[in-house]
Image 1 (cartoon, helix red, strand yellow):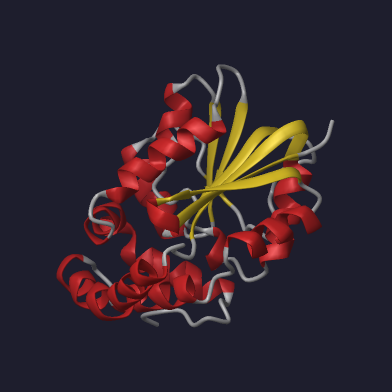
Image 2: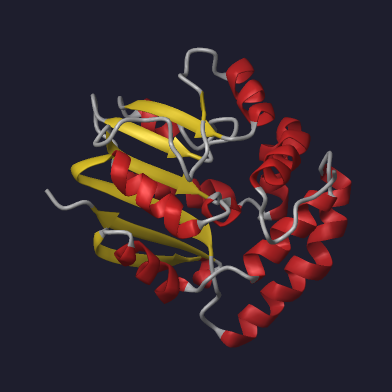
Length: 231
């Protein structure tokens, strides 16, 4: 098992991420040309975690994405279904409450979190709509969701260049820096097949979220979607 396929069987995806856990953060920095750090900062601003708030960070991996929320004084729960990722994260941040969980059936009570966020993980969950409904269930009334995900570049010439990079340049770069380069072929394919910004916004609304909006980053290569659970 070296890579998952686009039908996204949970066990296959989890195994794939287990295989890349050790060098995952480094590989992402290289493949994104350093943009991941900028994107994380924008996620932290959008979540706007406050002291004593409870934040659920889904698809948290090694919890690199969780650190800004903890530094803001929030109680953050890094959750992932890759045990390999969680093990590496626990070694790096032993004080954090790492939790194994499937995005389609979260191991938390209703109305538990002030904010739920997921970065670059929603497209790896088998049933996107089920995941959005689960996020809604565990969010407190008045709480918010922030989704950071690869999306569709808004300028056609740039979109062509970007898609060429994904399918032609990304695999050889991944071979140079990743412990499982074939995994990044799957990731490139999953990015190309992902819904565009309005389509994801519609899925959020269908799941019950209100005041849904999005903001493009890096020309739409990444989009930040946000929604609220009505009080």
